Length: 467
Image (cartoon, rainbow, N blue to C red; front, side, top):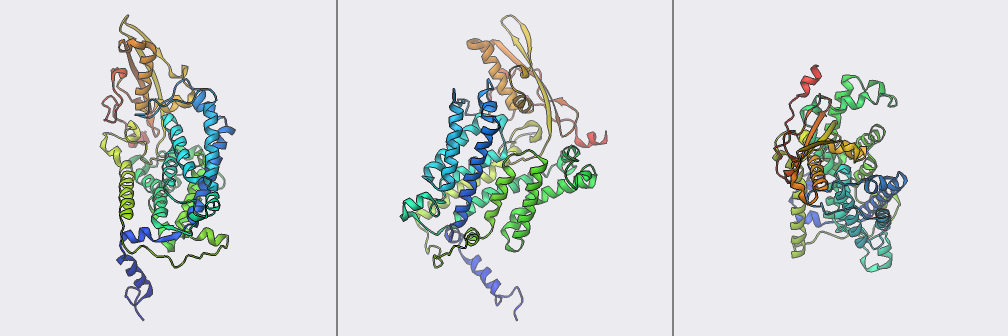
């Protein structure tokens, strides 16, 4: 009897054959399309639910109609909300497109329009940045190129010629990588001094002692560290354990428990439900088919025998795109200081539920034509939800400074100077100045370069804990 490591062992032989197969053949090997059909329907259904939530809770008016100003992303300052009832019409369109994606109705066109429509909403307002909105933008983009409509869809019924029971494996792995990125990079982001010392978990849990069964333990130090380190390890390890067949079910149950706890503990919208649905794509591709007991007939298909120019083009584009997605979250290392404080490189890096920030800001406006000085409280011109986000984010403070100068100065905006008295607290520290109050922000250009007018974080968390 051969040992588990000998080539006589059937499992070892299968592993050797797999390792000897070129990677490109594995990526183009056929897999059951049932998993893509499941994801298409889950994605479309959850997006339809999200659109309904915006109507039900009055968020369309609150976030895009009632505010007198918005904070578009750098390079998209020309984006503005639709006038009149346009934003309501836009969201109705998104809901229809989400339903069309779920049902596979004019799937490609629906996916393109949904990506453009949702990304437009995303880019309109920095104060509404959420990692799962960014994830939805990315996934709606890649759905354009994934043939999830070629089975169990209106398109497949209308055009029998496109029907298939298999798709290239790269389509599934592209989705899996996008689902895995928030987990893994979310774990990497937690490897920082504050998180490893139990903050902001300690503050969050102290406010949630009414949680069923275990809430009374939330103020105990062992529980604070268990949740902090447990969350870190789960984020880092759940994807490898989902990929490995022997641990897949256990990893899924842990992820399910984690997300259901988040539903109860935090107000993070559809994200937990979306991740539960998305994490299921790590199971065998045919599980949705087996669930409905449908027979799979294309079992004799195999990977292509040779690499064609089309394969090379697909692999090249995939490589460039994935390299961007894997490297972009590290860009905060190009900036000095703590990204949780400066916010430079914080967005698009999967820094999820990582910090608690409380800030206040007041703008000092000087008119150099008559040397008059006045103060502006942003609560006088903006809703509370917008001010709370802006006051803690230097780039948004800079953006508002430019808006103030343009609004007051008009064509003579250069005669207006705008300074900010901004104070912020990170993870329970005492408040300290965030912005250099001597700098005229209206003359500072918005750019991707490090900002020398952001003051460094000076209070270490260990000092605050000691106090």
